[in-house]
View 1: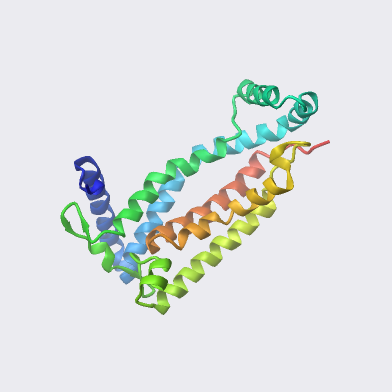
View 2: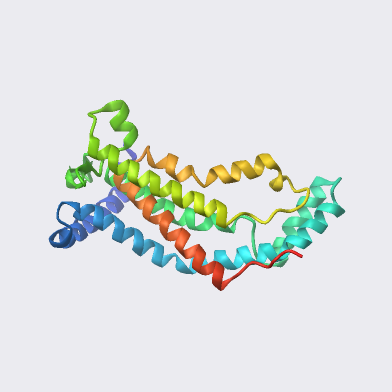
Length: 248
């Protein structure tokens, strides 16, 4: 069974296809052959603009967690030998402060449907029973419907695709490195989350987007690139607005 032929999903994809092709046609006089790529960028900026209130809430939650760091260290010392009690007290502390250690996941979860739709629109030859013209669009000669992994292992080889992907991945890696250096998590003494292994894993997560990008169509990789760049800029602005407390 083709899940994309399921009427509600097919209707959503068809509506998204119509909106994206209409936006691409409107941008064609300005962007030329890169009109569809420009449409993807514009959609990304619109989604990120709509998520600004979520980003503000996330910055406030991060500020709250930094303020709670001394209390968390105290809980660690008090219940060091009782992990279950420590977990309960920690979650109760977050609950009392109306925040969550997982607040930063919300923007990612809210964007997941958009990424899924873009992935599908640039993956299938047909959308809701009609030919998918989006697959004919390019960015600097690279097809928006081709992924780097597909090109390397499935062919045909395309130098423009390789170069465009290299540029996007380089941007994502630079953004990830800046994010890792600037937004280091506040360590909590004796916390499993502050162990060297956990900190290394958390640092590696910054680069996960760049890894994921090589498996998705170029249009989705473009969305991810604009998203991580916007996220970094937004976090830097909000960090100035909601600075973290300096540990004693």
